Amino acid sequence: MHYWKKLTRNEIRQRVDEALKQNINYYEQSILGIPASHLDGNVFNKDAAFLDNAPFLKTMVDNPNHIGCHTMGESEPFFAGTQKLEQELIGIVAEDILNCEHDAYDGYVASGGTEANIQAIWIYRNLFKKEFGAAYNEMCILCSEDSHYSMHKAGNVLHLDVVTVPVTDSSREITPESVDQQIQKAKASGKKYFIVVANMMTTMFGSVDDISVYSDALTKAGVQFKIHIDGAFGGFVYPFSTNSEVMTFANPLVSSVTLDAHKMVQAPFGTGIFIARKGLIDNVFTNEAQYVSGLDATLIGSRSGANAVAVWMILQTYGPHDWFEKIHILNHRSNWLCKQLEDTGVEFYRHPGSNIVTIRARFIPKELAHKYGLVPDQHNDNPQWYKIVIMEHVHIDRLIPFVEDLKELLHS
Ligand SMILES: *Cc1c(COP(=O)(O)O)cnc(C)c1O
Image 1 (tube, rainbow, N blue to C red):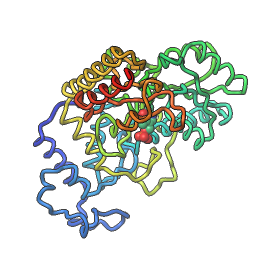
Image 2: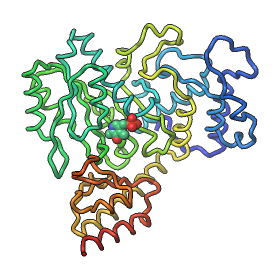
Image 3: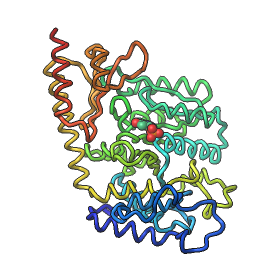
Image 4: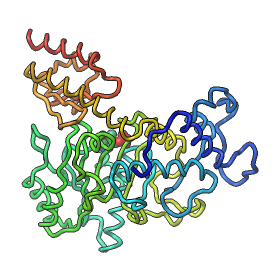
């Protein structure tokens, strides 16, 4: 553990206070040139007494801008204090969670998983163009049919075709045959450069792709490829629920990873995390961003420093061991639910250690899905699956009435 150590509330408050002191103070200094200020004082009172014990809200009111990427070169000096905390946060995620070597990565807090995925695909598109003179129609995004729809957004925005690989119906796995077949089809239509997005827990099923199925097939096909991991849901779960390191930077095949702190970490929305091996992000440097000190290698532009501070605070409050315990409590509840479903003869999918349980829709009457807020795989008349996501608030006591209703309905 290089960065990640459990801190007390007091330590956290002190660290955030120190960071804010290293940022500019609009009230006391003459800062004339930037189009930014503290939050409107007529609406958000900066002197409210409770702010002293609320480092996140205090940061919100100070309103630092974290524009740019702070793991590389110079950044805006105005907000150096809180940007340093973001750098530390990226260090925790890259080194302590995803097994990257010290300082061998770049990363930033993005608006969400969607942006982080687009950022990754943007990087590889430019890389293939720069290194091989590849045309856009010679590249494609390769991912499973269970992948998040942000891959289709990325394809649309970046002008790339998306090639989807079918998965098996009950185990939600890509197979060597299905991957091979899609690669051959893509090659036949002129694709030579493949941007692979492998899932570290899909949105609907919590399923995890076997990267080696992609890499074996692409190597055999003799084409260029790069692998991005979409861990928007699973980034803060899977590394703690498995002993395998194949979805981390310990695997040389992994070039970049998306995680979302606003899902399992319960951080405010606007806290996607993007991490890539050092240097890759240079492919999306916007040299025209001349007014930003250190230029800009991110998709987003201006973004809230308070968001980065919030995620840093949460992870520092837990530390690695309490976080591990938290994930295992969710796993325990998921085990409980699965056991009930098995006893009732209800078919479902669940990846080992995952906190998503996805039930065949034929076992779930619509009223029941509605009553308990289950989410279908498709919002039409014919859903195939409904999922339950075991979040912090989904205690076994919340699951019991659902299970009882389900049993009653199935037996009547
Ligand atoms: C939620 C999710 C996304 C998109 O993340 P947003 O934060 O909603 O933009 C991408 N991929 C997966 C696997 C997800 O679960």
